Each structure stands twice: as C-alpha cells, then as structure tokens.
Amino acid sequence: MILTISLAIAFGALFASSAYHKISDLSAFVTSVQDYQLGPKGLAKPAAFGILMLECLCLVLLAFRPSIGLLVGACLLCVYAGAMTMNLLKGRTHIDCGCYAPGTGGHTIHWGMVLRNLAVGAAGTAAALWPPTLLAVGHAFDYATIAAFALGAISIYCILETALQQRHA
Image (cartoon, rainbow, N blue to C red; front, side, top):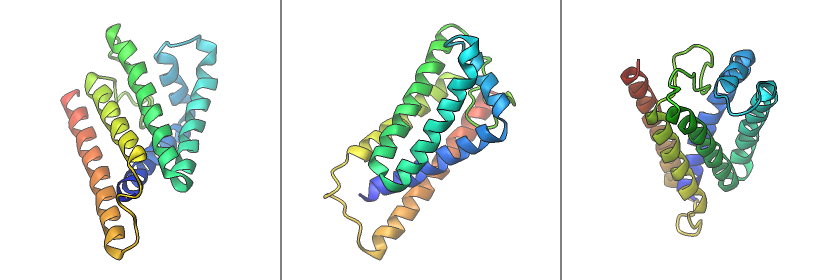
C-alpha cells in the first residue's frame, strides 16, 4: 500500500502539472495534438479535450481510488508513447510532445520520452497491482516513507526530464 500511495502522489503531481499546462494554453495543445497526424484534422480539438478530461479523471481516481488511477495513468502514458513511436518511426521528430507548455517547441519528441513514458507506466502498473496486504499503512513511519518516496520519485522524474531536454536541445 505504501508503494501504491507513494506513486499515486507522484502520478498526481505529474498529471496535475501536465493538465495545468494544457489548460493554460489550450489552443497550443490542440495544435500539438494536430501535429501528431493520427486522425482527421477536424478531430484534433475534440481529441485534445478528451485527453485533458482523461488526465483530470486520472487525478480524481488517484485521490479516491489510487490503484485504478495508477492504471488509468499508466494507460495514458502508454498511449502517449505509442503516438510518439508512430511519428518517430516516420522520421517526424519536430513535433512538440504536448506534455508541458505545449506549443513552445521546447519539448520535441524523441526516443528517450518513449522509454520514459513506458518506464513510468510500468512502475504505475506494478504499484497498482502490488498486493496491498504486504505493505499496510498505519504508523507514522509509513507516512514519512510515503512522503519521502513520492518526493524522491518526483525529483528523479524532473531530473531525468531536464537531462533529456538538454541532451536533445
């Protein structure tokens, strides 16, 4: 349970930040979705809205049903990895990922992002499916462990994201 709650907090921070940036510049996010060319141009706006709603649903589930929220978040990350893979295989590396601050051009897709999304999705899936009876939460030390693990996971993600962006800048 400690692992599940810790990763739910980390996933919550990830998807809250992602949703915030998408909402703050919705037209740029629609453009990012359109740039992936995975469907008709006219469906980019409804698809962008759907993605945003799924991320918000994920946040609600992470708060109230962490295991289900982790699975939904992992599925979203795998779908994002699939969309990036399809475009990278076509040689389309100029696309803004649409993750954070879409439309700025600062986060173009690359294989490191695909691997990162798959790894984070796998961690979320593992935590969601971890037998809850193995690690029950009940002591103050457990809550400190959860906080430290969540903070560590968020920090590692931010460090890796910065390193990937500098490598591909």
